[in-house]
Image (cartoon, rainbow, N blue to C red; front, side, top):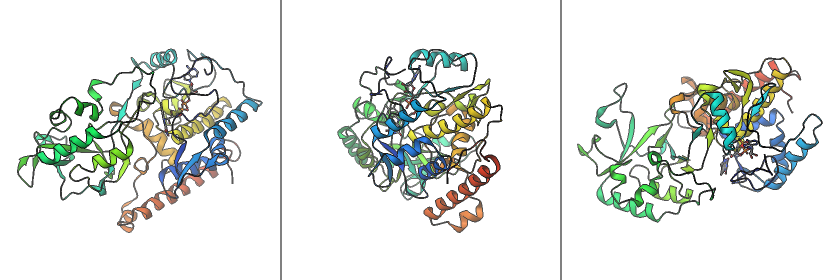
Length: 422
Ligand SMILES: Cc1cc2nc3c(=O)[nH]c(=O)nc-3n(C[C@H](O)[C@H](O)[C@H](O)COP(=O)(O)OP(=O)(O)OC[C@H]3O[C@@H](n4cnc5c(N)ncnc54)[C@H](O)[C@@H]3O)c2cc1C
């Protein structure tokens, strides 16, 4: 498409352009992003090789010189004898042959409409802001309490963690929220409006001091067990995953600077020492409802010659987009060659990422970064063994992933499906 038709965020004509930060996230051993990148390295990912060659100092993160990174990817693709590069806007999916759709979060309109038509939805999901997520064990349960509004819950349990404010705490919170700085929208010319049902909280707060208290911070129906009464305002935390080790701040989508989010949200009673697993963010995003549409091989259920990869497949982030591209690419090559596409084991980071985007609840599907939440929980013995040691738990999940990965490679590669390094 580029350079003739430009997206609102890309600045160059090169492949693999990193549109915002130049970080492919943590390289810290036994972190989830590290595990994902290790698996990609084992599969001899071109983009991981390019990233390593273009690495610049960035603490624990894999931070790259973005120009070197994309120049190397562009060079390899353009020089590859089996690849013909056509720089044009694709407006319809080809009728025959194996196809990978990887047009990203800023897929151009004609193609987005075509994908919506092919997948039978009215339009693709436009997902403009996300709420922060905190680690469950960093919430002070001496302050916060569990309850469902008016005791209503599917199974009668207290589904939410509630952080109660008195009037003074609420006023201080609103004052600081109004002072916080927001990121400029990434795409200044993008006229996508805020969805009224999904307004950033700083925008709601600007509409009136009490607006939040009658909106996402409504205390009604939530009896604080310590007072027996409703608080002045409440922030509700909703369980993020089956393991219940992380919770999102309900209705707290925002696009404040990360430092300001940490500072302001730690004013929430019970979150004074909260560890943020993810901060709130906002940008225009186009993705398909993968759990309803894709197989774990990343093929379209209704047309197995069509694969989806990258952000449009429902993952979030550079490394995750690269990962799904790698899997879709390898599987597409297998199909083109008359072989079966493969599903990576659930215990691996690659397998868990594909599992999430194809097995999540399609009614509430939201794109995800790789985190340990996506990988299967440890068994009870291991949980008990590493009870008080989160690092050891993560190391154990990585060890288990590595074993499953190696078994999978040994069973499947033999130079056929997986070209592996090392
Ligand atoms: C503004 C913005 C900022 C982001 N910042 C970050 C960040 O800092 N860190 C992070 O990890 N993730 C970030 N993301 C999320 C995401 O990880 C990146 O967008 C990532 O580049 C997605 O990779 P991709 O390959 O799926 O899509 P892209 O890298 O966008 O590649 C898709 C390509 O398809 C092209 N294309 C689109 N439509 C057509 C068409 N009809 N025909 C032909 N070509 C087409 C596009 O021009 C583009 O070259 C950001 C997303 C956005 C929108």
